[in-house]
Image 1 (spheres, rainbow, N blue to C red):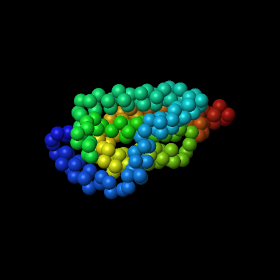
Image 2: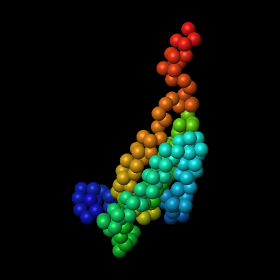
Image 3: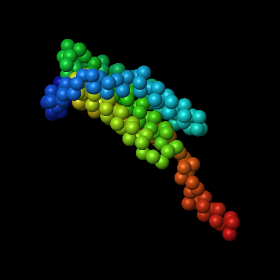
Image 4: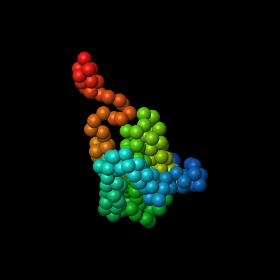
Amino acid sequence: MLVSGPLLGPDHALSRALVRTVPDSVTERLSDLGNIPVAVPVLALAMAYAAWRGRRLAAGAAGLAMALVPALVIPFKEWTARPGPLEPWAAGYFPSGHTATAAVAYIGAALLVRPYTRRPWPTAAALVLTGATAVGLVLRGWHWPLDVLASLLMCTPLLLGVDRVGRPSGPSRLSGPSRLSRRSIRRSSG
């Protein structure tokens, strides 16, 4: 895929069609959403909130997922040494670290706060911020489309782990008593 293969041609063609179609001032700001000083504090706040609400294991799982991002991304960048769309002399563009950081930070934060709200806005906001980061990186020419796609795929197991650990084991406080507990209440009072 990085040197030859059926995806390389469409990857390059799509990049050529998209790069610099939006002003750099816009795409740079979108790309910055994946910077560590921007994305990680969002996750840290969600982790603190989840821990404060008694979900320390879920908060720890999200922190571990973020710690694993550079442990996964950096070796791939060194191994592949893929050049960038606008910098063919440079190497280390595959996969996108900014996309991986954004995905784990924003989606991880949404997974942590999800049990406390019935509204879909945390998930929607996380997907928009992650998508905006990925689009900004491609439109600016800092990454090939497959670089950002690979990062999203690479982060999926990390986020599934956060989701699995973060799922409440019992009924949610927002959902009220479960059917089983309502039946038990009726039996004991009847």
